[in-house]
Amino acid sequence: MSIYPVIITDEKSGYNYRIYSWRENLKVELDTHYFPKEVNYPQTFFNAKGNFLDALKTVLPMIFLDWANAIPLEYRQAVGVLAGNQTRMPQLLILRLMKQDAPFCEWVLQLANSQDGAYLRLMVELAHLQDSPLPVLEHWLLSLPGQPRHKLLSRMLQIELTAAQAKKTRKIQLDSLPWDEHYIREFFWGLEDSDFKAVLNTAESIRIGALPYLRSLPRWLWIGRLWEVLSLFHDRAIKHVLPPAILEANSEQQVLVIKAFKSVKTPVELEHKLIQLVDKFAEMVPFPRAPYAGNTKLLAIDSAKKLKSEGKSMQHCVGGYTSAVARGETYFYHWAGDNVLPTPLTVQLKPYPKSTQWQLVEALGLQNLEVDDVAWLYLKKQFANLNLPWGYLLLKTTIAGLEYSDYSRVFDTLEREMSLKVYHESRNQYDERALRIDTPDGHKLGYIPKTQQDAVWDYVHKGEAIQCRLNFLKPNYATVNVYLAPQADNKLTEV
Image (cartoon, rainbow, N blue to C red):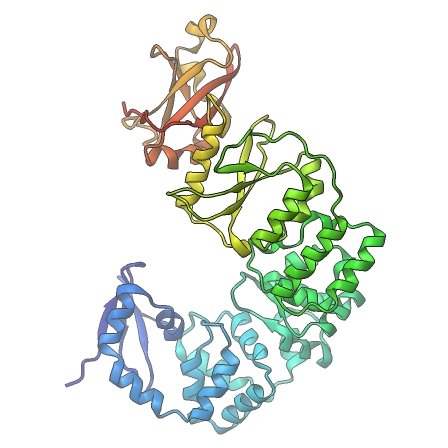
């Protein structure tokens, strides 16, 4: 007796999936309250995790294995080459169609042998077929062989392309970094730009998700190999790879940069070249006074020499930020470690907007290793202890609701920089996350505006100690600073 159909629940999304068969038509439906919807099983199940994946393994192992083993190894190797790291590509469906349709099989093998898989992945992505029913996917895929590439792409992108331009799709990689159709269009629009064309001729591949970051580089840095290496960094790190010393190089230094980067092929080589160039460019400029004095755990990096030494010991390019530090735009500390957070880190601060306070913006370990949220909070607490008596600034904001409070009645008793209390008013009928501000003797002044709550709420929710200071006042208007307190011995009180 067949075990099908089988219903499996994805606990994360709450959806039920009804599997009809994995031997023949591979039909899977999303079991909704209204009517079932046929879905693309590769996207649904190949990305499964946790309990959902365990449930799949209990009903699929032998049937799936038998079916997969019936596919010739040559076919599986070809589809593996085409898929790359793109998990959304319908791999099983393509294998099935290769068994059933000889012209399609020949076309897929030809793509794989020419290492031209980006074209097939691009077609699937641009057609928005990830969630389409399987018959639609089959019809679309079987229609691809024999169609002139430039004509098909021209219709889909609404851009006139030549056959030579369309061939550039073999350089496109769609994995990891986020992207949309606009980046694809921008890629082909760029083919009319002589500089961009030179980049593409030199680079072996371009990741579409990295395109906006790469296009923002100074044009003198438009080097094909450099683009390719930079596109390997994820979307957060790529903004920090090239330090100001490189991006702000003068005309004489630019010649050295271009010469150094032309031979770069890997991220490791790029880091090595950056360190070498930073050593050449960095001047021993006097650093401004450190925002906080520091201690044995947090050591202020107060000279260009020390900053370059930090970059060498931690194997990243922080030494290139000497000019930014000299201008007062940023400052760095070395976290030596303790029992709670033993990992050595390079910590970056930047001025809080319209304030004399500073905020933590980056904390990186050896070779740009990032820290988790727990370590991030712990570092903020360390800086809170360096900024006595108030702590680490979380928020500058106006007080909302002054007209409905005791503000006007107690206005004459208020003073700038006086300490106030912040309460989580959990019984507030209008906002369950309301954060109320009171005077020390219990007079209500108002609330932290709802639009500003996110900057403070996580700390409130975790029970971290918060301090509040009256920053500015006049009739019908007042502002406060909210801090993560130096010592967490006073919890927020719910009223």
